[in-house]
Image (tube, rainbow, N blue to C red; front, top):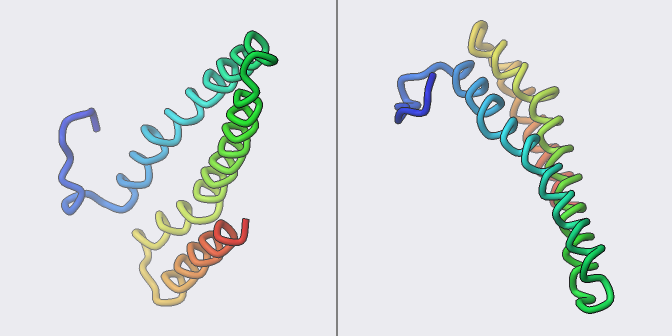
Length: 111
């Protein structure tokens, strides 16, 4: 699948999951370290002149950690179940997927 417009209603769940990992998750995993370096550089250069950069630096890294954990949870806990469900649908597996998603969302709300 390239960058052409994709009609997701005609695609498999496996293709959707693979697309998310290959495009969105990969992009974040590539860009977040670069942004981290930039925020650190900005902090070092402007530390005493602009106190707000300490907050920006801290907030970015909190967001970065949360995004990394979110991506890992999806790729390890949810996406494999979705791929299995696509091949062998069952009510039990669907309930497990829904429970995993609900648990992940609940944990996000708590933190």
